[in-house]
Amino acid sequence: MLLEVENLNVYYGAIHALQGVSFHVEEGEIVTLIGANGAGKSTTLRTISGLLRSRTGHIKFKGQDISMMPADQIVRLGISHVPEGRKIFAPLTVKENLLMGAYTRKDPNEIERSMQRVFASFPRLKERLNQLGGTLSGGEQQMLATGRGLMSRPTLLMMDEPSMGLSPILVEEIFNIIKDINSQGTSILLVEQNAQMALSISHRAYVLETGRIVLSGSAKEIAENPRVKEAYLGV
Ligand code: ATP
Image 1 (tube, rainbow, N blue to C red):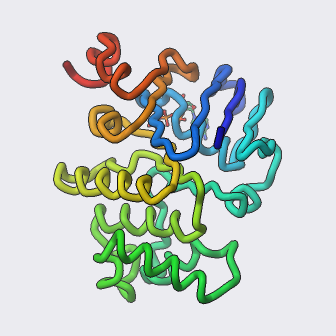
Image 2 (cartoon, rainbow, N blue to C red):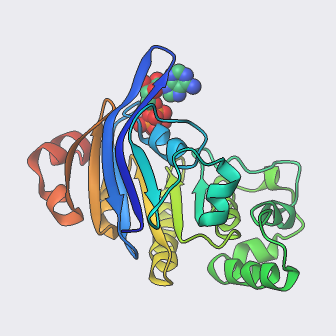
């Protein structure tokens, strides 16, 4: 098992945001967390990244307990987080943004190789290497945030709402790229409100409601579940 999350209870002051959340990701999988606004999806990713702490349970990555590790060490171990809203560095160029993603690495040749791999997935970033991040379109910013996430050479890439605010064509492009990244060997933990698209590329999925996992199964099972169809697929 690549990632094992067991019994997370996370609070923001008096708000009990995660209430006993458990799930796992196997090596090579794309796993999606589906849920409405405020269900706790971002909180889950932020806790795995070491930005928030759970009061109970544990998070194991490649068998090692990371629940108390500082965030930078978690990146070094192989988890990368592409945050909601992209959070690119607006006053920095595309190249500088990508290099920020490699801050845990030293070897310049290896970093250059990773950058070339990012350009293979996102040729548009190569064309805009010296453009300021803040002047990119929404779709380009998502590409940049994803590319930056790949620069640490993660085993597990966590993506928070990559399709948010993008046109249908760009959404499809982003999901194709996610599939591609996965087929090259990176496991993916995806958080999405666009359940239909997310399920179409995922192996398995979990449904999160008000801080609890209420359903889990193969992406196909979840997509065919009557409750999911009604609440998340608009069927
Ligand atoms: P969204 O897609 O809207 O971001 P989400 O499923 O990612 O939803 P979270 O952002 O994880 O949901 O929020 C879970 C709960 O925790 C919500 O009730 C939210 O209001 C609350 N919450 C999130 N961040 C904070 C914060 N910084 N302070 C207080 N409460 C917070």
